[in-house]
Every structure is written in C-alpha cells, then in structure tokens.
Image 1: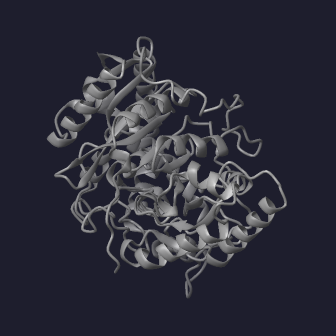
Image 2 (image 1 turned 120 degrees about the vertical axis):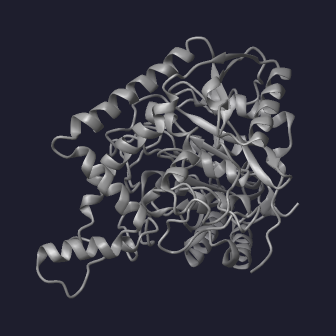
Length: 489
C-alpha cells in the first residue's frame, strides 16, 4: 500500500519506528498535491519548504531517541480560518487576501507539538458561510468523487484533500454542519466535538456561540487520535470548557452491544433523497445486528432549526465581521473620499455576496424594534432545541440519522437559491444550536458513485460514545475504505 493511503495511526507508527522518514512522507504528500490539486483546487496556500523543514526536524528528533508525538509524520491540511504564524490566513475572502497572522491558533500549536506535518491551508466558503465551498473568493473546490459536483462546505477544501489522499487528515470548523456535511459528501469521517471541548483561540470567528473546530479523517480511529491531540481547556479561550479530557481511544473498540440508539423521526421526512434514506436505514440495521437496540425518538423543534440558526448565526456574524473596516489589517480600498467612504468601499470590495447577505440579515435582526421579534425569539427556539435533545438522551445513549438529505449536488445547482443551499444543513444545524457532539461516517454510495453519510449524535462531552458507535459501524462495513479516482488536470 502507498504510504499516503495508510491510516494516520499506522503512518505515525511507521515514522516513529523509522521504517519510513517524515521527509519522505512530506515529499510524497507535496508531490500528490502538485499532481492532483490543480484539478481539485483544495489548497489555497502550501507550506512546501516549511513542511520539509518540519519533517527534517522530526526525523532528527526521532534519531536522537526523543519520544515522537501521537501524530508524528502525519500530513495534515488546515482550513484557512485557522491562524498560522507567518502563513497567509485568508478565510477565502478578498478582505483578508494578504493577512499573515503573528501567532498560531491553539489547535495549530497542539498539532505541531504532536508532530503533525502541516502541509497547507485549504479552501472554504468565505468566512465559513456556505454549504458548497462555492462562495470562496478564490473559486470553488471540486468533489474528488465527481468533479462536476460540490464537496460540501464550508470545510470543503479539507474534506476534498483528505478524500483524495492529498493529506492524511485535517482540521475544519463546524458552525452549522461545516465538518459533517462535507465529510458526508466526500466519503470521509468528520467529527464535531462538544462546544467548548476544543479551544477556539485563533479560529477566525463566524458565529462565536456556534463555531467548533474538529478533525476530518479517513477512519474513526484517526478521528479519535486527532481529537485527543487538540482537545482540552485553554485559558486564552473563555468559552473553552474546564472539563477533563478522557482517553478517546480507550472504549473505541467496545462495540455496539448494549447501547441504546434513538432514531429521530423528524430526520426521515420529506426532502430526503430515497437512496440516502435507504443507506442510512441499512446502516441502522448493521448496528442492530452488532448488538445495539433502537427506538424512535422525537425532536419536535427540528423544523424550526434552520430558521432560528439563520437569525442567530448572522447576528453574531454581523458583530464579528465589523472589525474588517480597512483600518487595522486586511484590505483597504484606495482612492476613497473620507473615512466613511473608505469603510463602505473596503467592505463592498472585500466581502462576497453571501457574506454581505448574512451581515445584513444579522444587522437587521439586532436592530432596534426587531431584536425582540427575531433575535430573542430565535434564542428561545434554541433553548427548546436543546431541551429536545436532553429529553431524547434521557432514554438513549446516542442518536443515529442521515448527515445530509442529499448526496453531492452539481456545481452551481443551488448557487442562486440561498434557501435551497441553507436546507443542505437541515440535519446538522440543530446539533450546533444545542452545542452537542456529532460525527459523520461513510455508509453508502448513491448511484454507485456519490458518498452518503451516517450521522451519530451524542450527549454533551460524550464524544467517547459517539466514536464508539461510529467505530462499531465502521468495523462491520468497508465504506470508509472506498477511495475516489482523481485524474490529473
């Protein structure tokens, strides 16, 4: 097997055991990116020389007998809203087109400490606002399973890179499904941890009460390994939870026997593609045969999730993105007449259509006379959504359902219909509103060629059970081992 096709945990063991050098791994990853990425357009910035230097330093450290980190020699891709010291961080926006941070995000620091080889920064929907990675100022990323289709979003660059083997693993951010939905569409594993499990310090904010960083991998064990490396409290992030980080690998192989799984009836209604429904129902049968029991549960406020999310998230975005005004950093429009003109022209030139739309929606929702009617009401709905999950978890250990209602759709198919694009996240946004953990794992191929994802949802800070269920399913199937064939450009 080609070394880049090895799981992260096996590649790490090979590097740590000096059966292969980190330098060789880095070189092969960069060569594969050079061959295939001109077609997929997953990366915005490569750390070519820096990755090779990091690999040489890791090889020297191992040769000295120093203990290698848990991700030693694993090539990883970073979504381009994670700050990287000395490396351009654009959020796929013109307004940050040449922004170079002076510090690393906490998760980036932790990956470096774990020995990961950070090969580059990946494309995304601008400021993480989108479900297709078509909203990037630098053009869309293509789905490696079918380059006429989207990879999902907003972490589409990382998921496409991992699915195509350009990187062994990566990090994305999930505000309303932006790790899980593209993982489903690209046939990889995407894990959204509990809000507060992973530090958000150095993540460029979209909606601060919803954003969460998580791993994107090709199997569940690697997702657990990556989460272990990045989880934990951080004094630099006031929303980071002061809870103990468990050993996520300890119960990974415990199997599904004895687990009670809930099937939310609202996730199998109108709008779901028949092949998606069939694949997910077959996956649930696999878990039953593995020893789990199932029961139908209800999440009655699911139908209000999209509406509430698209009040709360834009409201927070309108506040967070106010800092991009052309004064301190980023784009500054030239030839303007006075300060107000500079503000207006900088933001007009710098923000794309979808970002502008959400800023206006959020500003309206927070404005005098509308705050109570929209924002406060959305927060009340958010509370009801969380109560629904709490009630369901009173009788089950985890929930199982589809990740996305449809497989990957055609490029441009939903670009001019914002509502249809928003509905792509109908099965993922409620989990963010409740702050709970969830994972998407591959469970089928629609039409024999487009990946389908099974979503597993858990209690707050119970990623261990979510991972256990996902691994129990993965052990009984081979969908996670399927790989797309990507032709060179």
